[in-house]
Image (tube, rainbow over all chains, first blue to last red; front, side, top):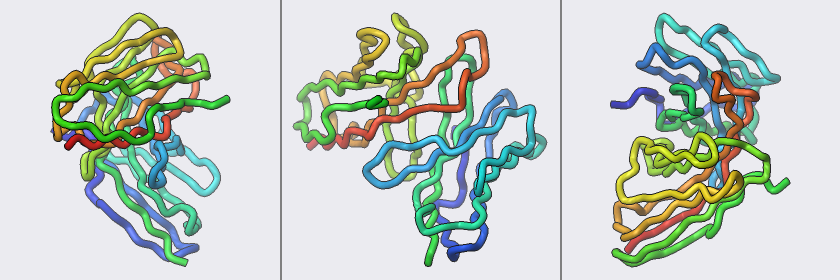
Length: 112
Length: 118
C-alpha cells in the first residue's frame, strides 16, 4: 500500500512559468513532510520541508503548501528555471526514528 | 566535510555472490539509513539505524543485512545476490532527536551505488 503518492510521473513547463508538483498521503499520523530534488547519478538533496502544524512554508522560489484535510501537499516553483529540471520526491516522516516514506517521484523538465 | 560517502560507486555481481556496500558520514549524525531506488518505485527503506548500536528493518529488508559499525559507519550486506536486487542503493544520515521532532531540516544522502546482479 503506497502511503505517499505522486500521481504525475512527469511535468514539463516553460522557463519563467510556475511548476506545481503534487503529492498525496494516506496516513493522518504523518507529522512532517519533505521535498527532495535528485539529479541523474547523484543522491537526493533536501529542498524544503513543512511541519503538520503549518499550511505553508516558503524558501526563495520554492513554496510548499499542506492541506491536511485533503491529505495533500504541493511544491510550487516560481519562476521555474532550466536548472530545476530534475526528479522531485516528496516524503513524509513516520514515527520517532526519522524514517521517511517516499513517493514515486515526478520528473520535472523546464524548457528554455 | 565530505558529508555522506559510499563505496563502491558501481558493482556487477553474479547471482549468488556476496558483497558489502559501505557508507560513512562525518557530520556526527545519530541516524543512518539504507534505501534502494527502482524505476517508478521511489526510494524504499531497506534498514535503518536510529542510533549507534541499534538497527531495524525497513520496508524491504529481505535478502539484506546491516551493521552499524560505529557512529560514522553503516554497512549493507548482500549475502547471496539475486537479479531482483539490481538497483541503485543510497545511504543517508540524519540528526534526529529521539525525544521527537527533527533537530534540523537537513538530511544528507550519499551519491549512490549502482548494483547490477546478472
